Length: 356
Image 1: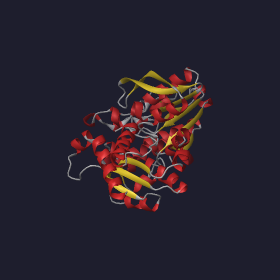
Image 2: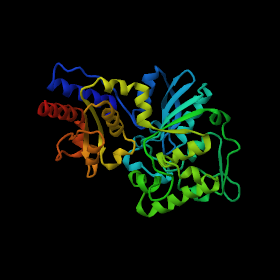
Image 3: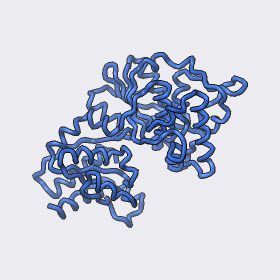
Image 4: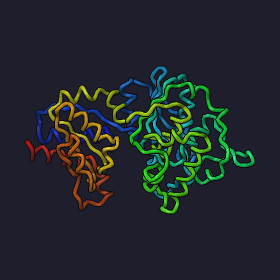
């Protein structure tokens, strides 16, 4: 479900249990899917369709929001995991070129501030694809061009930044980052998120070393160690190290844009959710950010999730009153996905009937 569809299903469940309740729907995002919709709506932005590419380099049309000289976009809309069918996903052949194309299009259209969401990527290229679309050249030992995909990164001996877009360097770039991981190491982009994108165990060390080499070649090892550098397969590193982007927790950025704090301060109960929750949910994910605001406002917060994994109970110490499973534990995944809105509606209604 999109954030808006999930919110509507929650609303229906509330009304089933408490017909007279007043509800306020505030679709959220932490920087991945739904990020552009949430921010663009708060700005009253125009939605712009532009040529882009998916993670595998195939031409697509992607959308970003433009309001005056401000543009909002996300990597999920171009090089996102959901853009590539499960059987086609291949990190070694994937890059962030598509995002670079959107950035260039927005800058050419007059944008001077770019707000970029980093969640949901299918890539692990250290942001090299994005940089090449903005004028950076990757060269081998013979000064021949090298592609930005991880399969080719081992051949890179020099990175020529001379042609990097002046407009991109002069823009104000705010990055909505949903993780705090550095670029490399045991808590880095490849080790933590690579397996979710299809990186095999024997390739983790190799790809991690290639990202470390990228930082070494450009003299940016300090930037590579910063929290958030490992977001979106190292895209956070490239944006901050080469374009001066400022990192912000995505959930905080969106919450400010849509006025979530004010809404929570007027609420008796806050409902939020995620497809899956575990101990990593505390690292900048939407439910944790919503729960923090609810705790500060003294409002109870309930998290609904399709999967509640071991470790998720730590959320109960961080502003969450209850964790509620959406759907039956025995329901096949395909059926659970198809019945997502109905399952959410029933879960919310059942919880409220039991509690009120």
